[in-house]
Length: 638
Image: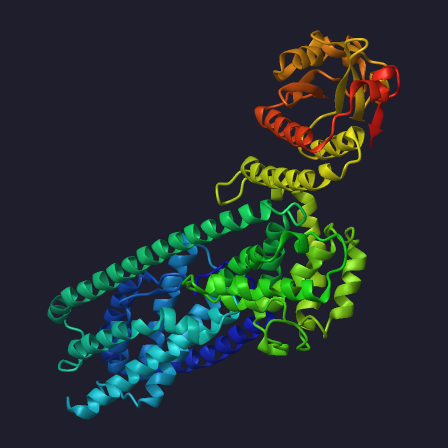
């Protein structure tokens, strides 16, 4: 046992202590028995010791579990056949001792691992030899018949099963996964190694009852072939495992990229998926989930659990008030729709049940299947708690975010009715650790992800969605405006949400003075624009009005004078776009900011100006109050 990736629990300490005590007893009994054997066999014994130690220093590491195997079992079994269970127990102890020394030097072992490695193999071989009734060959002369073969087979099989199952149980307790899963995945194929070792051991010692050099030279090629074959097989398994792991990483990265792209389109729950994934994986590990496939399933489900919301209309998702019963019924389909979409993908782990049932309730009142208690997949129960907490502590259209204390209270109230009490208790227990990690690295959600997607790419998706939403609202609200002023207020309110500007102004012409005056303005330093008159054809906005051409990133001081640089938020850049209706310029939209604008900002304003021109009625100049009184204060939008 060489795995150091997990902490040792009290249970595994107790298991190691039990194995160590039993192993110590059989080792003491074996050495006592060996000391009483006839001295004339000492040379044979020393030869076996040397062969066992040398062959044991050529271990083969088993993939994924950091356990080792070697061809030394051949000489351990040979020693058991020659000297009985006492000989086999002593030999395997020496073998384990030298292997532990080698592993401690090359990899580093904890004292618990060394103790287990020294106790489990001797205990295994002692029990196997006792149950198979193996008698020392130098004391008996059994015939090489079916009975001997049966005993040899029984002994080799029992030694294999006991040794591998003891190790599998230790690893299972350490990694918190089922022992049968570890044994079946990593140890069952070792039976061939033990069977071959038993066969070679029988050929080595049966006829001569001693270790002869010529026989050793005869079987060395077999041992080398056995070692190389097993090493080659393990390397092939390891290469295949790494290939599968890489494919799985690519698979999960693809899923994550698509999930984050979908999440970036949601202006309300933006960042929800990333937070839920982080908290869900931490909670699963805190609950003792160690099975790699189950962890991968939970990780993928955390990313994809809201996929089905693509089938829910946006007005329901972002409704600023409570849902009606019919709207809630439509919202509920997202769990089934998302699961059905994922069902068509052949995941190597069970993602679809987690997504389908993450809105089931512990008492059976949830949807879509009304499962309750342990019927609900564990991954779904974990995801439900984390999903709820993140929703409660995030701003939503129908309510502001809750405080942590309020969200914890809600989880406690729903404990045992909506959510698994065990999961809720564990989540509340680790919440301090989760928030401490967030505070230590507050920019984690903004850093580059493992998918290769950087924040600017996700921001582009988010901005596109925001732009689509604002244009949709503009199309709906502009025709409802009673006059040009109301329409301008709507226009500027929506533009400020998608264009990073300190101040935005809608200028209209005054025919009497041939100047532009502000009709509606929004943003900082509004008093500086009171009474501002811009001659048509001059400065920035006047030139744009006269030539029907936009201007981007001109010097704001050309428009406002030196005062632009002295404001609390210095206005350095100007972006002005004409509002054209029936081939005539009717107004100018001008933005002023401390940072440069880009072509997307100009495009957004141009498109919005077109909607504004099409939707609002332009009053006749003589009837427009602001045209008769150009000194009148502009309408402010806050």
